[in-house]
Amino acid sequence: MSSLPFVADPTPLLPLGVRVAGLGLGSIDYHADTITLDARAAQLFGLTAMTAMPRTDLHACIHPDDRPDVDACIAAMLAVDGADFVDLVHRVETTDGTPRWLSARKQVTFETGDDGQRRPVSGLVAIMDVTAHKVAERQVQDLMREMNHRLKNLLTVVQSIARMTARTGEPDDFIARFDARIRALAHNQDLLVTRGEAGVTLEALVCEQLHPFTGGTTARISIGGPDVPLRFNAIQPIGLALHELATNAMKYGALSNAAGHVAVTWRVADDALTLSCVETGGLAVVPPDRRGFGSTVLQSMTEAALCADVALDHRAGGGPLDHGLPVCAHRRKQPGLTPAR
Image 1 (cartoon, rainbow, N blue to C red):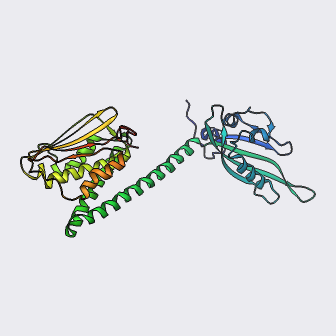
Image 2 (cartoon, helix red, strand yellow):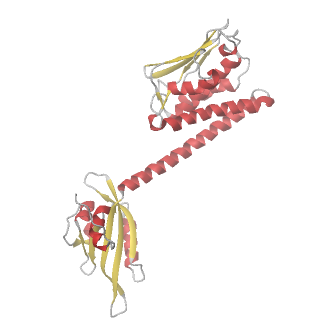
Image 3 (spheres, rainbow, N blue to C red):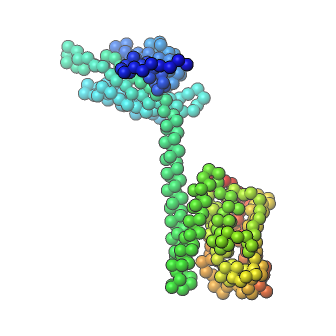
């Protein structure tokens, strides 16, 4: 391709600029009530190029849902006291049924007759395909709605954690317990942001939630299971459940001494995911005499959020303590098995 010479006055380059911008042009004759489209404009509307056609033929290509607004804007422009310019964005119907978004900017020339009335004579319309921009705009709108929905859900979880933490335990250590649980939520959010479209796997969530309790070492905690991508609505309840299990192990179970061990494993069978946390070598196990926040998270919240069945097996003699946590509704949905969205 030969290079273009520098031109101080860009006016001679106007035809090239129109082509580079992807603009289509249409010339309107209001006396004959026709419009003639160049090749690009004709391609955008699916009409014949360089042929004078009734304006109604072009308007018939406009999407039915957009036609009333387009007709009203054009009528207002052509009125006696209307403006001489209009900027429209509308869809046209294509042969394959997919919508094509067009930006149409029209400039009209008027004349004043012997009766003093202003009438349109001619017009120029510049047309651009803005489908990609409209798709991106829709994606942003959908993302904002999704973010708003997720934020409301997150605030509801925070509110629930605050209430339940205040109801259980001593008031003096409320801040410490509440702060730890909020940090667990923050770890979940970090995963969502850093993993992005790749989604969050169960292994990544387990590692993220257990890291504060292990300092990054694996001597006291072992994990294992198949690669399982998690759906968004499964991440928060599973993450909170893992945090509560690890907290209990640190306070009362296998991680409260120097010899205990925690094994976190999961398996998938018959479209159901089963997550288990088994403690060995810990202190003597005594079933709790009251239902605290941890029990609520492990059972009520997890069951409700994931349609799951939760089994807590407190065995005498110090272990193993099996916190079986089937985190998938194998009879209905499978919220733990599809990628985060």
